[in-house]
Image (tube, rainbow, N blue to C red; front, side, top):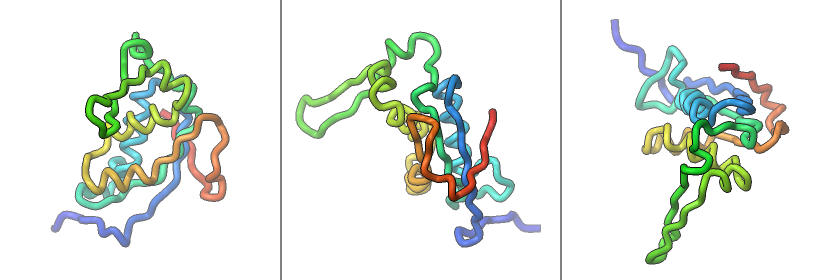
Length: 142
């Protein structure tokens, strides 16, 4: 008996909706990362991109536990000498909650071409409305 290996042409992708309202940001991001990679599928193959499309709604209502809202910072470099920028998560969650969720998920997918391809299937929305009703996404509870 041989080990099953999924082929990229045989992958069936589904659409899922996750409501982040009142749930911790990191817990939601881990669930999203697993769905994007396809880790819960029986035909999961590590070297093949077999993940699904994920829509995250209510990103602005995601919670950061403890003192992370005041202490945690997001750093990025502009490319110019001495231009390391930092943004507190309180500011990030107030202005761009979608970016905070995307950064959390990005840190949980592999830093390879498969991880980058998985991130293209992630859609994050601030409110409850999304543009993908035609795809008939399934709601995921956790």
